[in-house]
Image 1 (tube, rainbow, N blue to C red):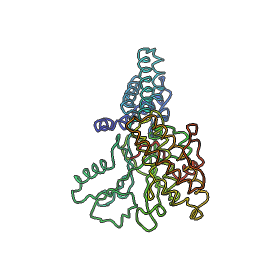
Image 2 (image 1 turned 180 degrees about the vertical axis):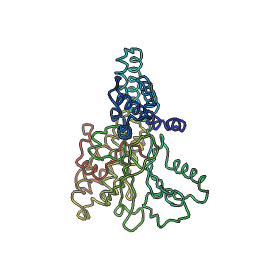
Image 3 (image 1 turned 90 degrees about the vertical axis):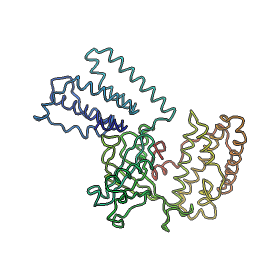
Image 4 (image 1 turned 60 degrees about the vertical axis):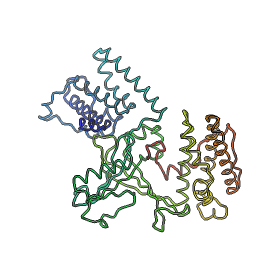
Length: 444
């Protein structure tokens, strides 16, 4: 499996295979006794929850005695794990792995190997700093895939899976690959792709055809989990819960006006965590959360605030900054932030909505104005002379937006000075309750 994964470019999965092999070796040596290995598969828990779950059940029967593993064989295997974790760019796992390797070298007085190990660790931690600064590490994307067609898929009919795809694999790329794979197996005219995330009734499909539904999903966490998973790596490693959104309206259409637009968030949980020795894992449970139009507005505005907060962090990318700003401060009637404010915060209609939700939306607009102001000030410092006119246009749009919000909310919304920063938001508790998805997770 490790060799196949490596040949196909699935280095994280190959690394997992080697880690499971090492865990089995350590279990064997621990149970056999007579050596310095008194730890087993449970010692790999910090790297992956899957490992102790799969490998702790080893029993030393006659077959196991045929495999005469040694401490040196385990050490060689652990070094191979370190190499694959490095190639998979999962540098953060190396610290926990070397906690198993270093005591073995210390017992043997292997000072050259100790020096090489600490050098590898130093390089790994430097790489973590580098990729966190550049944002160029891509740990993969996740897709929900469902197969329909008892005649073709048999036991996999109507079963949901989550697939982990390498790097920046797009929805179109995985769809094309699956389509080609199953058309070669079942026939060109038999396979049909379903490219939206709406619920599918298997009984309404043509029994003579094979259907494949593919949906992009992102890792999903509770508020408590997000407090522990603080960075992009932690939010994309050892993950088993995912979310995808489906827009809908009560009239049946997928999309409607701001006042009519609902959103369905579907949270699915897989039987194992990613990455794993397999690229696809079955889904074991699901939960559906429906957001009303005003909750959709809160959710969308919180996303805008989070995206802006992300692009103003050093080192700022001026192109990303300007794209976010342009999409945020444009004063348009039928789309964007102002449309949400006019739909739900106009004094004439505000009594139609929950007081709590209205206050949450107001809080987010206050944060939004602050972070836009910070972003504009940063843009002013970063632009070249030939972009001054463009910046002035952004600033003018921002002033118009503040004026419109002031009239709607009956309170002053105006450009703020440099001393004002966006602090803790009162609306975060609500947002985490209705969203839960990490803003740092890999998203399409």
